[in-house]
Image (tube, rainbow, N blue to C red; front, side, top):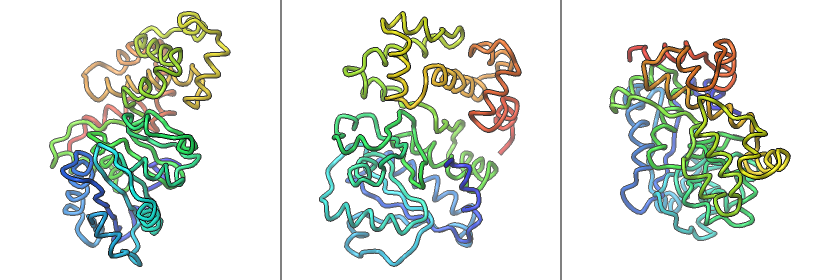
Length: 316
């Protein structure tokens, strides 16, 4: 399931969104979610979008119930604190009243602990990897900024909550509405879902899987002239088969595919942030063939490099 599948939900009138403030004070994650959605609500009007922001404790006390929301998000601080089991159950019950629901920031770990992320790709904030227990590993933890899998949304929080919100707004209401929100918030670029939490891999695998971390570091350092999988395996001191097994087990991919996605993510950044020609960007990311670059880019991102560049140049 991808965010692109949400376009039909954006036709609901009005679309009702619940943002649950689960923080203990001022939170970058909360501001990064609330501000884009409140701007969107002002642009579209109450007939198309209604956004409710409710404190967690007030919501649980009122058993807010019977109310139905199309999208529900629990948004918390960047720092984790445990939630009593009874409150966690009540929170999950409230979230389940939404068609699509999830969490941003530290509350992602609450949903993991509740077992509602089992078998789903989940973007857990990297500092909380040390807080996970054996039960939590049933979720498929990824190093991405945010994920949408099985009707569940998850975002690592912090500044990524802005990218997450703007991507969700585009999926629901299109590029034009997203552009107006970016203009209002003075935001130039939106990072992709597949962009990495840079320290997540090291935090999760650094001590336990040093060879895996070393292999990924080699890939990130050799974007313009990609290394062969056999060469990477030799450089980190393990066999190709061992390397492939570790990538499959911990990253859900094979080395060649993971490497290709790293190069394409770098290409997307260059297309959006620089004035290099499309041919130059392809060469800088290890693609000697323009057709191969265009095809691979379209497969991963759903648009061609030329269309990506045109979106950048399109006026708000």
